[in-house]
Length: 80
Image (cartoon, rainbow, N blue to C red; front, side, top):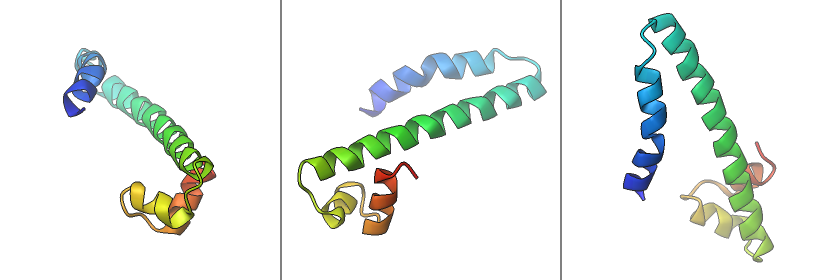
């Protein structure tokens, strides 16, 4: 999985490296960071909601999601 994720991010890495103006590169990095945070939040919400739809309790969802608290798993389910 890690190799496939590395490959998926390779074009972004190359694109950022190609920006020679460092202040512009910084702005692009921050934009990429915001985009990734939005994607991460969306996918964590989908996972949490999907696990709940499968009938799992919030404590079970939390354990599957890396041992976060059940409160945090609930927050993920709400998109927070």
